[in-house]
Length: 97
Image 1 (cartoon, helix red, strand yellow):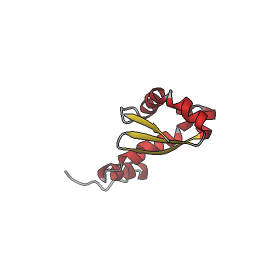
Image 2: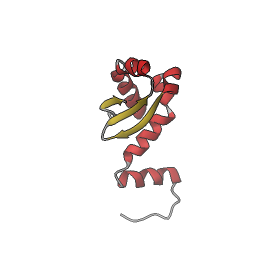
Image 3: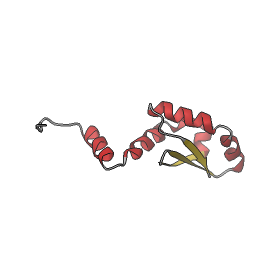
């Protein structure tokens, strides 16, 4: 395939580089961070912080036990909303700590 000298948008080039290096989860994690309030709701998003998205597991840190318990029962809904934002079944499990 011939290389083109046409300019490439930096965002697209960065995405391709991350995917090629096996770091595509960072792109997904960033998209979740940008939409965190949509996924959890305004109040919960202030209390629960996205820690990471690694190996299909969404890690969420919740310092307050009451909120951790509440979100425990919402894990499946959180997983579905996150995958809806990502447009694919990327999140297979939600872990709270």
